[in-house]
Length: 315
Image 1 (cartoon, rainbow, N blue to C red):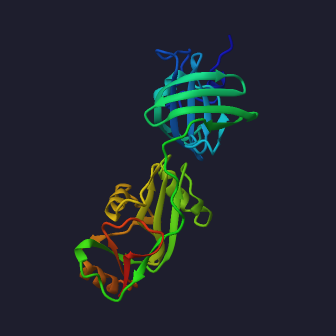
Image 2 (spheres, rainbow, N blue to C red; image 1 turned 90 degrees about the horizontal axis):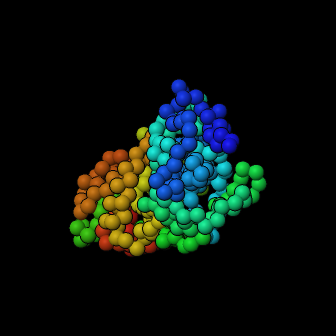
Image 3 (cartoon, rainbow, N blue to C red; image 1 turned 90 degrees about the vertical axis):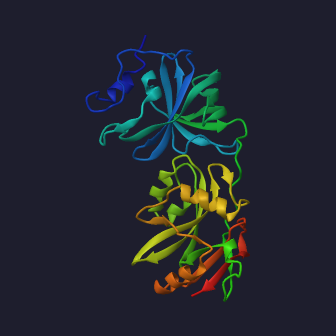
């Protein structure tokens, strides 16, 4: 019988990589395990591995598993991997094959509905990945992966931002509002899916932000502002998070979800927000030469277009 791991071994030096390089094949208890690894290599991708006859048959999926039947994703078949890879995570040294950080994104069992050289139908039973999928070969090592059942995922929100109504005076009921700086920059919505964002076409430095989200989907609302002579993307709202639309949630819930992301980098940050405290915020805006303050109702949903729930008060 041919050595199913010969290609795997040929690509790796056990003295240079922490990856498992076993001498023989093994299997799981039931012979139907799977693992999906998030792989921050030269390009972010996810590795789907299905147990089959003592090895993990593997595909690299650049955009991760599709979340709805209307979108197919590319899946490039790679060499079979050893069963020990079910639990592998760590740093593959730079310069080695597949160099980069690898983490276990999900693991579990699967059911085989069909397996041939050109088509693999299966059902995943994992904590993060579940459902019916089919892999079908298109050309050579290139396959496509299609979801056969509907995922419980909200559609992305409209691409129109919420805009404030201008007022000369602050609201009387300050306790019903949070107050933020008006940055005087250019508005930018940033959709993130599969570790990528279309906003990177104009701003390539956003690729790092998108990659940091991994497989988590999101739509961020913010503003490109110049602070200290540098252009910074300041985020102040979150419209979509990990498959769930937040536009119908109150500002307080969206703000809490945004802050939980911990967005902080050389080119982006989370905007500060102060509930019930207009005076000091306006004074700080004046001192920093900012155009004014935006008051946001704590109970307001996200409403595309001009809204009276957000108020711009000039400095």
